[in-house]
Amino acid sequence: MFKKSDFIGTRTEEIDKYYTFIKEIGHGSYGHVFRCQNISTGNVYACKKFDKQLIKNKTRLKTEINLLRATDHPNIIKLYETFEDKQYIYLIMEECNGGELFQRLALNAKNNKLYTEKDAAKLMKQILGAVNYLHHHGICHRDLKPENILLSSMSDNFQLKLIDFGLSKVLKTMNGTMKGEVGTVYYMAPEVLKGKYNIKCDVWSCGVILYIMLCGNPPFYSKDEKTLKEKICNFEYDFNHPAFNKVSEDAKDLIRSIFVDSKRRPNISDILNTSWVKENAPNAGSDYLNIDWQKIIKYSKLNLVQKSVINYRAFHMNANESQKFIEMFKSIDENNDGVLTFDEIKNGMQNCKFNFEIKENDLIKIFNDMDTDKNGLINYTEFIAALMDYEKNIKKEHLIECFQNYDEDRSGKIDFNEFCKILRPQNEEEKKELKILYDQFDDNGDGEIDIDEFIQGFKKM
Image (cartoon, rainbow, N blue to C red; front, side, top):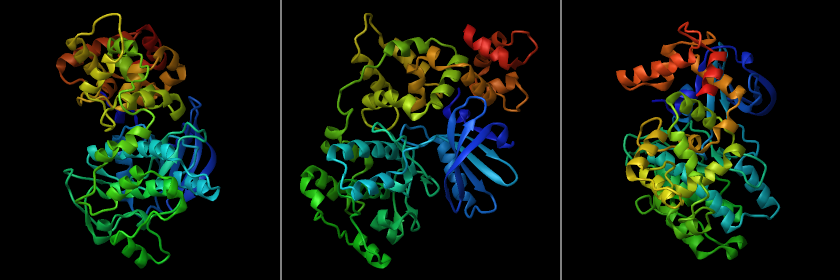
């Protein structure tokens, strides 16, 4: 079956054939970031452009690309496709025009407009949710800081997006240990400075971010790096900043629980379940949003090709388009791990009143029909796809873009082998069923599907 990473193209062609560069929006030692527009669809993205001659650590870039391909969470930046020519590597990514969380925090501190506790809890829940998702998949970020968290937009209803996985580590076990002083000192846990640590180093960094949100200053500070490291290792922080006079003991207790030895430090799941996070978060508890489960039932009856196209469109939705789905997803993600189990889907549906009875076997079938990558869980993209009003949200330009993704050899036609690479039949029986679907698209019977046949075939289904 298909999965989200199948929608991320890898091209060795000239990027100018597909994208127009609008303007530069950032740069660093690695290269430049541009605002770009897809020529076929008109959609706008961010493009990270790396000069291969200047890449100091190719392993780090490879790690980042691989993890962006694998992750699927509303608070983790999306990678849509990559290009590589003789001189450059290009990453086409989700555009986040709200800037860095660091910039927003710095501006708030300068204007004496710190986040309220409720604001901080709402934002921290997004950050913690993304990190919890990573940890459940055996990934330690290792460089969590406000500079590596982007705001999806300038509006007040923005989503946070975690970026920069170049220093991340994939662990063989949840209890796996790491070595090396990696990250940014202000956000480093003491055990990182000592050279041996585990996944809880990310928890410490989250605590530093929370502290800064509440008072505008870091908990551990010194202009001298040696002194700074000593303060971190000795847990030398306080709540003497005037802003903490208005902060509850619940919030302070949470920070106190984080700034301790790693053996006593809670994990991310523990923090997400603290009363401070849950009571201040907008979608906490059993308050299920108005989810149209009828759409999910309708989606479950579609064929594999239709679902693939809808998932492709769902994956390419921007933050504004997907905002309502994010809130729905989080309202039924009871343990905040970034994926939905059968029980969570079942509980969500039981909180919705139908004019007919849904039996357990029907629920199992609906769940399995939503689970297009067949991993036993519903990820973020699969959830959006099942709830999307695809008749309104999938237009001709989206079908063209999806067709180009299917057309691996760029011939302008899709043969059956390319069809199978995307839709991944698991056995000969599924392959035969897929061939029947393929033939329904191949209107002229020449053994290949062109763009017109693809568009018309989808509309007929």
